[in-house]
Length: 81
Image (cartoon, rainbow, N blue to C red):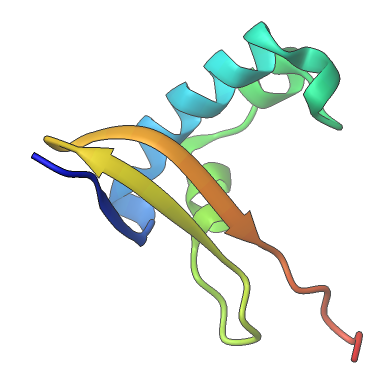
């Protein structure tokens, strides 16, 4: 079965958080934050980070058989044109 690409939402917070933590632990130099900081985030904070926004910010997920394999996001800074 091929991969499904879709917007992530609140229901994906646990899978997103686990995948991000794994990436932070494996390649800390690729991120501006740390695994320790990520572990401190609440589920609600993770949900807020991946929630699509009206100004165009979003996180896409690549899933196969329901498992989140990868993510890509776009964050548009508010007040910038």
